[in-house]
Length: 333
Image (cartoon, rainbow, N blue to C red):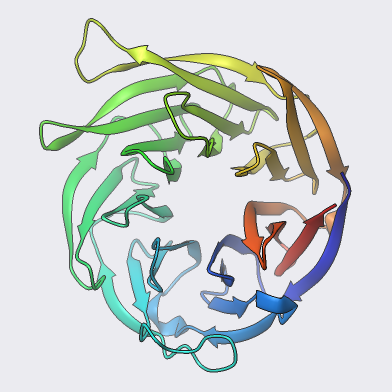
């Protein structure tokens, strides 16, 4: 496999922190407080809209598209979350999105580091430097949000949240070197498992996209490793806890902190970090992985903060965002 740079988009004047792609539409966020929306269909790569940067007073750290909709959530270092939407039938290929600010969500006491929607779009999760994870119940229009649970079992800054692609499971990654798995129990949310083993901050995690009982998660850390975890069974001694096991550590390629990891629908994993590399791994047999591709200086001399697999025009691409303010699109030949 060969990674080839298709397009480098200079969308921001400062660091690109977060990217998300849905329906061929790219959203990016940055330290410059701006959110850019870009059409990726047919390789047009044109900026459709720049959202009002007065909505947030500080860095916009995370953006996430709500599944099956044109609603976007954004989390900021100003401790708030903004919700954006547009007219459902608006043409975003050649016209304006007409995106409006639908809601501002308040509750966290410190910087919001990550936001993520559940697979059905019913829940929004957020995490913060205040050491907490909040779960919000959303109405269909994306205008009303009710906090239904505040999860405070992490002992340090929570860096990232991600939902399982088809189950009501949430993973949170933290400065306390752990990943926690959360699920609903008796109308509340409880910690079902603690994944401990990293020797540094866990910056990001992502679930495998496969269906069925074989639930797996990858995690990326300050310790320079990507680890794979596997769900084993329900804990026979506790009705809401689960037993998870460490399954594998991916080949050591990164020389510094790994900031972001993405598990693609075809089973490949991509990682990026402060060493400026993008690395793609492939599982050759159960629990055994090899490096399929490694590209150094994928954003020049700058650190790379985020990576995401995406489907555009029927093909798989990688999207990366870096400290250079650029969002890069890569094909995987």
